Image (cartoon, rainbow over all chains, first blue to last red; front, side):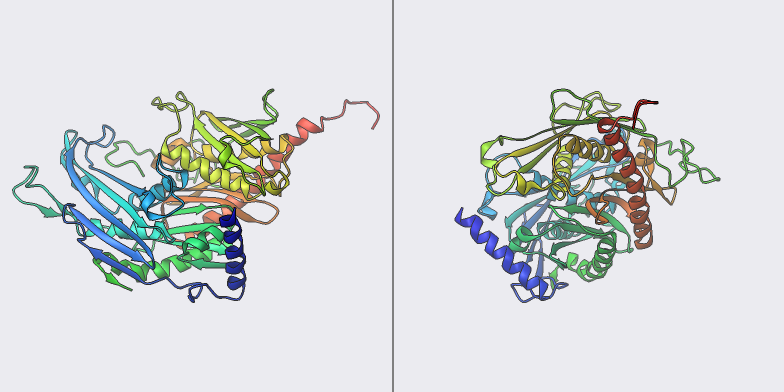
Length: 262
Length: 250
């Protein structure tokens, strides 16, 4: 109960600040927290990256193994993205089957990677109908301080960019070779705080939010995925404006897939 | 989308600009809504939309199950969107898969955005959506059915929630995709509108669109929602204000 009251007070405070064009951590409405991307963080994975956005931290690892193509796509490999929201990352998480919102994070990230055709799946095919590479992109959230979606996709993308196909280990080819990334999706997430729509929400801002909107864009300027979440509403004009902001920030953040900080 | 290696991609748009079922780009599939289709539920609605058949039931406000979800200051809105095993070509394994859980979540959030939940503290309002036959656009059909069912149950709301998916087929923005268009189209963008405020409470998108196309799609979807809104109101009028007997005194 005391936690509920504290959250209520925080929410009111965040909304008051937003109305004055301010945020608790001093950022402007269109400003990201500091982002760092450290590729190759996990050496047991075929590709990996540690991504921090402010206090949020996620690790993505790629694992490739030979498998069978789906019957309806005999000429393509398989790519699945999954996000694990483990209880160590936040006091509000409970062990057990994934909560609907954790499933949502996972699926929204997966949707962007899939729709952008990040990997040319036909190149993961070894023998049509019989053998193809199965590529797992697993994202572990280790510190949830808001905006998991953007962090998770950036980590998964960076891990894919740095991934190697372990062809030699599985005796599929003479030598290992780099996994080829053909498109670079970036997701930008916004939340409504009163009449202000702020980018890159913190955990408290997400709890205070009156609606959340994620827009995924790729390097060609296409919009490849969107997701409105939480209770709240956006006008079509709000949506168009956030799309413009997402295109602008996407262009800026995309270079981070190679590693580095902004 | 999902058509890698597929052999036969049908022609989705004729040279005259007509779609595979003869519709124009801005035309909805036939939509029939029946309010109060069930007997045990507090509110219900049945929707036939193109080849979609969707039933919705509302129970509540009632005790919250499980108990720990109870909120002291408002009702919790719970939604269960489920597809019957026989609703699609290849049998679907019964139960909620991850897709259904995500859809249930975004639909519940859409309804919570319009229901006056604070009028019923410590209760639950449960919306059950059962897809009996699926042909693309089932989450929108579910929203329409669920929304009419909420009204039928007498739950106070800001407004009804018309919903429709806009997509891109053969490079053109089209309203209300059917299955073939959804499978072989280039984008899908479901949305739900609050007609009173003109704001969207559900919005998802997958595929490829330029900024201009997206803007056009939003406008087309809002227009479609307004047409659906009229049919939703009509369905409620038919249930609660039956047409007077001819010749009877006014």
